Every structure is written in structure tokens, then in C-alpha cells.
Image (cartoon, rainbow, N blue to C red):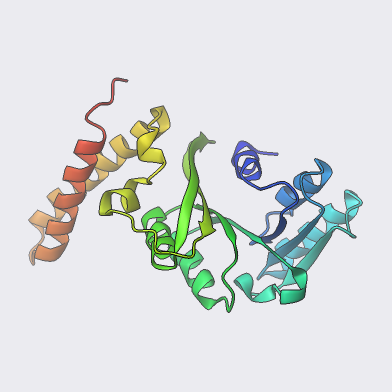
Length: 227
């Protein structure tokens, strides 16, 4: 199993009942069941092709009684009788992730989310829906940097600052080389963007203000980088 999925698997609670939304050959649920970390999972996808791949791999692993496949959009494939307590969504954009969470009639106790872009959108949604971020990981694999967020439903509001929404409340307390690399690259990108915004025939003052603010936040966040 690739490193990204290993890190996601490490955040799954023992004997959780998971739904893997947008399943990738059902690699994650297969490994979790084989390792006896869980005993039941749903592998769900909106497209028949990936779901057929998942079915083949589940059959080959001899796990058709433990892993069910579902065809459909997002969390709409899950039913109350499934008794799902953990949703895993990985490898999709943060905006799509938020749209799928909003479309769900149920909010689940635990979410493990790996948006490949738009992490701030996801954290904002978690805050607005009373989820508390328990754990965050940042990893680099195959030239890509990924953030993984584990959150649990809270009975009370869990406010986050603008800085925490952008950088991650856990990640910013445990900055590692990958964190600095990501935000150093982002700093260069945002500086170039600001330069281009200021050269435009019609200057978008609001966008200039937003990008300038983000640049200042990034500079403050990585000023202690010693690498």
C-alpha cells in the first residue's frame, strides 16, 4: 500500500465501521480488513469503472463478506443500517469534499479527509459543522505533498483562527521539513500571483488585499525555518 494510504490507515480507529468514498481499487479497506484493524467497510464510487476494479480486488482478497461496494454519489450510498461511524475521503479537491459532506443527510462521528487541494475550505467546513480536528499529517510522496485531517463530531462549537484554518491547528504546532517546503513553495507562488495582479489592466483590489494578507501569514509562519 502506498505511503499516502498507509498514513490514512494509521488514523482509522480499531474496529471502526468505515465508508471509503471515491474508493481507489478498495486498497484502503482491503488492507484494513486484512490487518484485522476493521471487520466491515463500504467501498463507494460514483463511477462504474473504479467500482469494478474495487470489486475485482475485493474478490481476489477473499473479502466479499466484509467489504461491500456501492455505486453512487458521495455519502448518499450509505444507509443507517450500515452503522457507519467513520468516513474516509481521499484524493479529491477540498471544494468537492465539502459539497459531498453538505449533500449528506447524516453527519458521521469521525471524518478522515485527504484533500489534494483546498485544505482551508475543508477546515472551515469542519469548524462550521462542529467538528474538532484531532490529528493532522503532512506527507510527501511521488513529488506531491498531501495533508490528512482527522476530525470528530463535537457537541459544542470548535472555533479556529484564520491562521489555523489555513495552516492546520495541529500541523502548525508540529512544523516539519515538508510543512516548510509546502509553504515556501506557496510563498513564491503567491508572490508571483500578487505581482501579476498588480500588473493587470483592471486591478482587483479585494484579491490584491487577500493575497497580500496570505503572503504576510506565510512569511510569519515559516520565518523560523532553519533548513
